[in-house]
Length: 255
Ligand SMILES: [Zn+2]
Image (cartoon, rainbow, N blue to C red; front, side, top):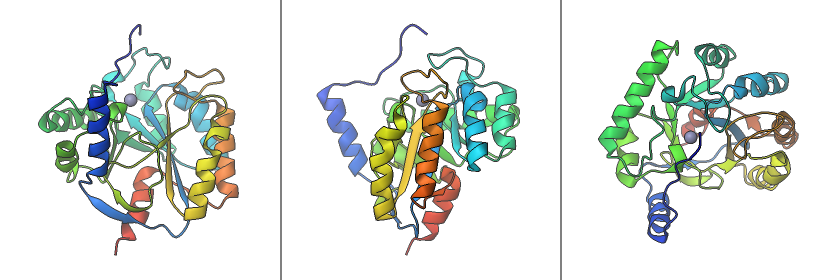
């Protein structure tokens, strides 16, 4: 891949993003009785299976992989993307497959109906590849969304996740959960203050990354950083759960 699409970095786009973040489409109160960590992988590079799943299995935790069916078997800056057998491996080990749209579109620029169609197409394609149940949780490609889209997705998904950093605690928008990147070989050191803060506040922390490899892309991490992050979370008393199970847990805590 020679060029990578990037959403607008113009000031007006930044302000729009901020307003969207603060305009909750589906406010929920998140009040877990212990800190929760969800580890998520976007786009689904094949290296998640090769280098990520063994780490998760050794730690006896499960994660969420947000898949784009349109990227199946493609080449990318994260290396080769997932194949049919990778999808089976993730599913067989009890991890959650979430939706990341079919075509990895910029959801802030597309009409909500188009995004809904794209997500329906993703569920259909993943189903044809062997996914047993349609995804219940979504991650916005590039973290981009709009208030209208969040409203439109409310009946389709339990949660949708962005990429604006923060803890999920107290009044939150279930259609724009916050998440912190797990990037680079020093990812563990970079996220450890977030883990400490989430532990102190009994919050739900969602981490996102892409590929997992000894030499990852700048949007991925290493097996060691992943393992160290999970161990740190366990030492701090976190429950490590896929997004869907965490959502079931915290949404039950609604008053
Ligand atoms: Zn993505």
